[in-house]
Length: 372
Image 1 (cartoon, rainbow, N blue to C red):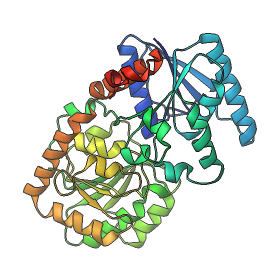
Image 2 (image 1 turned 180 degrees about the horizontal axis):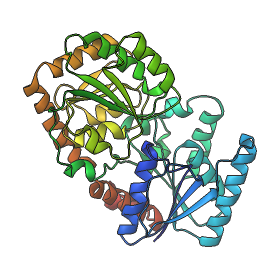
Image 3 (image 1 turned 90 degrees about the vertical axis):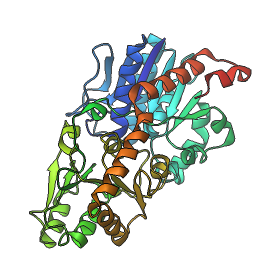
Image 4 (image 1 turned 180 degrees about the vertical axis):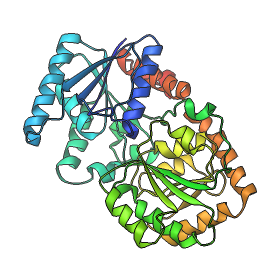
């Protein structure tokens, strides 16, 4: 089976980028002829398996206007599909999904699009809503991360779709870690508004005096780095809150932490949270839109869920875990059990089964055999 995967980039640190990279390698491992297509080449990229061929539509991100850039990418993608005739083109994220559907119009290539964020936030208004409600109907298959995201779409789309969680790299399952040994609270993500690290920093400031031996360590980079640094200085916590920057081996850096916190306003199914659970860390997450937190966490059992933007609630949840080591270890242990569902082989098997179903054009009477 010949498969094309398509996304704008495979920039290291991106959640969807990591998932599509892992899946491409897993499909190659299962004997598929796999090509990874990106819109452009990026500076820091995930490493692909040598069996996965790489094509970039642009040597670097074009700086032309958006319409010209999109038309160019659609034209190039269509040309590649016409020439190489893949059985299935699998695309991730809204813009690549739209380009993939237009590029394959009239071709024999089947299309699977994957929605990676809360659709109401990503395409709930204007042109984006119109395109999602109309062009998405052209796809042959759909993969969602949560039931809530799936239900945003029309029944005809839901009928042809599946919900599949993200795979977590094996490195997070087999690293030699000791949760709750290191006196640190950790978080991982892009330093951007949607991740709301302001909330985490302010919540930590509320309990900093109670736990003077603890540090807050935030891994990742982004446009808000300087602003967050200023906030940390204003709170006089520059020696306690550390912006660690980008890290290529995050599992080894956070494996012994006492607590992982996700403070986001918006997420799809957050890889950073799933990776922390695979490490066996006690976790806290905001109840962000899209349903991802409640897909992963049973509140109070294998983690704690707090309201979005509520620094006092977050501080209280942090206090509850940091003040009770036995409770923290129990949360982490149950998070580890839940994480077995995210193992790459398990997730890849579900994808492979669904891809075969879409590629085979099987009628609906046989659909149950291929349902995930």
